[in-house]
Image 1 (cartoon, helix red, strand yellow):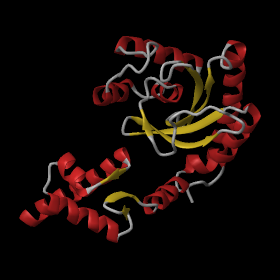
Image 2 (cartoon, rainbow, N blue to C red):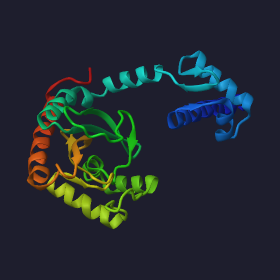
Image 3 (cartoon, helix red, strand yellow):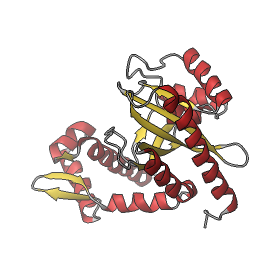
Image 4 (cartoon, rainbow, N blue to C red):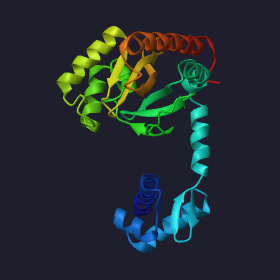
Length: 257
């Protein structure tokens, strides 16, 4: 029993070290020990174990994540049917609009950026592939939330809250539920500087044949370009066409193989 407990503690420490490296970039033994409240000898042991298995690399006295994790992540993404069905359509939409187009899914109550296309777009926002993001302050997130059962939305709010990131962010449950009702009715979600000042976005959900959420696709850009009917009509129309094509691909092709 004691050995099982020790093993679980060891596994937890390894995951905490990987999370710390992801957050800080590079760390030394002392930093790991201080952040995780463990002995330096324990930190050194786990870092060396990760080093031997190519999960981290060592530069002088600092450690950072190795590319082995990247390879694992790429393989994981390739096995997601939505990614396989949507990639080409996302590229087409990015080329057509010359704006940033993002494909996202939901995991553990957060959005996960699965793929993006930025043909000709000079927009630079913090949207690295694989990164998680809150749902309530992004068009992608609201497009998915609007089609979740209320119990699931309540659970996500309980778990992650409704943090305010700009003056325009929805920050109460009442406001959020009103917005999600509108999104569900109209079939399109808007982000008007709710995540980043000066950036607007528009998104539509991607559903399976049973009406369950698979993900969402969005177009994002600076407010000076994302206004008027281009923002409220043209981009929602293009997104809907892209979404419809992706849903048909998923329905009629065997992307699970």
